[in-house]
Length: 530
Image (cartoon, rainbow, N blue to C red; front, side):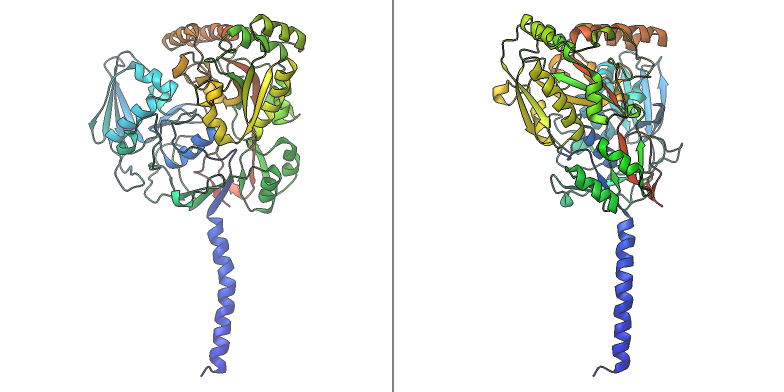
């Protein structure tokens, strides 16, 4: 028999539980960071694509041997340090104690060696390093040795570079996977581990704080260097292609951080006391129209150069970043504005006014006869979609028979990786952008490489550019390197590996209760909720 006292006691308990449950749920929710990425995470393997969203994902899971700070100075990360001997031909790199993979296994030198070798077969900057390597071995569990054919003083910079592809360290069993094949597990030693069971393609990717992670005790946290402390128990990437839906979710607090809000919404967010709008990446994004150099008609440089006459960089920048000139720059060549290697050589090739008739005549003289050209466009990627709309209009107005293919980002990534003819899934031209930090000099400037089928999407061939790049590595001082970069830009305006469209500085928007946001690109350590 239930007495009145027991009934009152039970009711009180239920009431307390009813109060406690929302508090508990709120506390749990506060330990989850909800992030809206620029696009869906179509690929997971950090070396299978140069897509920036893949890099952001990779740096949650994987750590790197070295990392750069905001001034792009390299510091040991997984490495405890290194010793250089034999006139720069031998590097002895020691690993930090306590490094552990997400599967519980200790990080060993042989894991690092296998990871570097796999990455070095896909990444173009990595290929430059590996070309100088005579032997890369695990001397012991805690030490790897790099024997070089010639000195390579930029070794820490390339192993800790922020541009795609980052040199992600993974277990040897995964790193032995053919570089052309995707790894099947996301096992790293970084601050978060990937929760594959929670993945919903096109909608959700989830990461859980890795209890076994040991941040480096050295230095200050800056960009990719210093202690990487995870303050959230869980990070959720929520893909929201519709801008209005993403904006509403951010304003109501359903999500905490929107990586790339569209320009029209920035004034609304800036006036909201609960939101902060900020440019994290001072190097910006280098926008471009990229050609497929393997297929006609853009296998001919005169075809590529002809389109310059119809180009106005400001039109593309306004489409991507809005009218506010704080967020973009035109008058941009092939190196990041403000960087030591930037110069104005050849910039007179960019016209002050468009002349479509002149371009039509130049295209005809170059041999264009009205053939269909395939232009893949990711409509769910706002920046690339905006650039593509301007480019599509330009190409039609100069008489190009354009097959404008509106696709999703995952499909575009697969399409532009194809070297096949267009009737077998290939392409001719597309809009893209790279990180400005990758274009500050020739070392990591992937899109300025001229190595043909081993280059990145577009696969241009230019022995002159490659020879100049080699000279840049061997140059004795900065004035010599700057002169070489002037020659490289002059050559690039002849070869036209891509049409430069300017640089934009993408603001991000997040809730003001987030603190510790790092400069650079989206990084998920050091952030906490106030």
